[in-house]
Image (cartoon, rainbow, N blue to C red):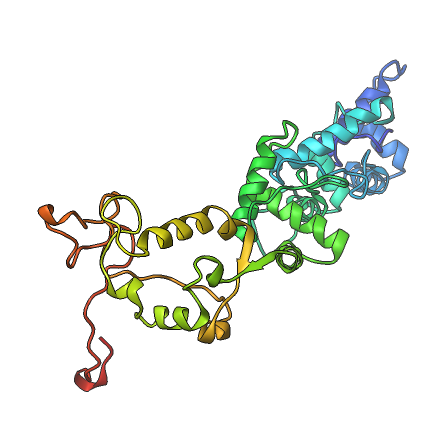
Amino acid sequence: LDFANIRKCDHNLIKAEIRAKQEGCTSDRHETHDAVLMTGAEDWTGAIASLMATCEEKITPCVSLESLDFSNVNSCSDRELLGVIDSAREAMGDACASYEIRPSHEEAILITDTEIWNDKDDSTLDAQDVLYNTCMAKAESCTFGNGESLEVDGCDWVSFQKAVKLAIRGDETCNRNVDFELHALNRSLTDATNQGTQDWIDEQCAIAWSGFETSTFAEVDPEFTDDFMVEYVDGETHLNRETGNFQGDCVYGRNDEIGSNISGFKMEKAHETKVQGFGHLEQCTGRAIMCCFGRDRQFGDNNGNCAIESRGGCEDADPADNSNLCKTETRSYPNNDPP
């Protein structure tokens, strides 16, 4: 009896195996009677118990959990898991005699040494669980392999995700969703560098930032010294106090030159250099400035309701896309409750 390649150890399947081997036999003996004779049992109950034990001992999967290649799967879904098993068995050809007989989920049970494909119980480990965990542990990145590079436009997680999405779209063989590829990429980087994706990004970006050319606000305009900038962020200097255009029509004093300098710096050095802080800004971890403009001082730029004098002027004009500050008071609230 060929128990090694039987579909599974089941009473009816064992009977079917006996019948298949009886073909051409001169006896017309029933398979249960042959079972009793071959096992030396007293009856069918004893015979099938013996045959089941022999079947469980001899039944053999074609592949092993270690030999399955999950590195390039598009996900760890049931379809992908069973597809990996079938692909491996099909590639074995005649060496896998049970390929046409044993369904992939039955092969999975044998491979994982479990009792059932999916028992729908999260507290137990079934064949599906074992294969899923193995798949997640073996999936490799398809966007960042050996000798390949990943172009990332920015040192932040969002930019990294965008780069991974673009890499997936550019590779016809990589049909993964971005979350699964990020998992595989994290695993691949951890294996290669002993660092997860986030730690690796932080380290690489720190190295990149250290090599950047630096600049100062004085390079935006000579008037923007450290002392000037300290006053500026406190709401002082003519940049805050005055109303008037920096570009376009009706530009007075140095405003035209300052506007041109700001525009030029924004288009070039702001993108290419790391701007240094000043005064108390040096103490900030992020060293970032958010300008909360409470009014619009420039007309004709389609950015706020500041207009020429004949159309209302710019007195108390509202900005379009910055914070519109509201009045606040520092009085005590009833019962010291927060506002």
